[in-house]
View 1 (cartoon, rainbow, N blue to C red):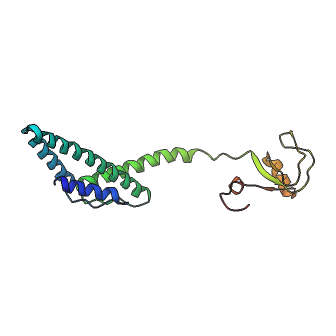
View 2 (spheres, one colour; view 1 turned 30 degrees about the vertical axis):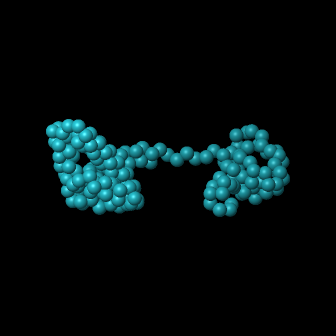
View 3 (cartoon, helix red, strand yellow; view 1 turned 90 degrees about the vertical axis):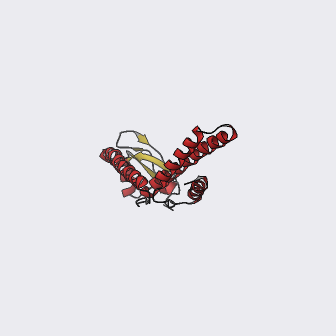
Length: 183
C-alpha cells in the first residue's frame, strides 16, 4: 500500500453510489503503510520530515473519510434489505457487528412503538352536502348551522350520523391535502 493506491481507492469510493471493492487485506495493508510512515518520520529531519508529516496527516484524513463513507453506504444497503459485501475480513466483521447492532436497536425501539396503541381520532372532517340547521352533537354542544360545501369538524358519532343520512361526506386529510389523489 502507498499514497497513490490509497488515494485511488478513496476517490473510487467517493464517486461510487455503492460500496467499491477493497483489496482483501486492505486495512492490514493500510496499517503497515501508516506504520512505515511513522517509522520513517522518526528518523527524518528538515523538509523530508515535513513532507512525511503531511503525508501521514493526509493519509489519516482520507482513511477516516473512506471509513465513514463505507459505513454510511453499508448502513444504507442494510436498510434497503441487502447485506453489505466486503473482501476485507476486518471490515466484514465490522459490518456484521454493525448489522447486529442495527437489528437489535431497531427491535428495541420498534417494540416500544408497536406496544403503543394507535390513537383514535375523536373528530371527523366532513364536507356538508346541503344546508343543515343548528344541531346538538353527542357531546351536547351546539354545531352549525352549515351551508352546502362547508368543511366542518364534528365529534365522531355526530359525523357518522350525518354521513349515514347523506347530509355530509367524510373528507380524509390525505385527500384534502392532495396526498392521495381526489376525494
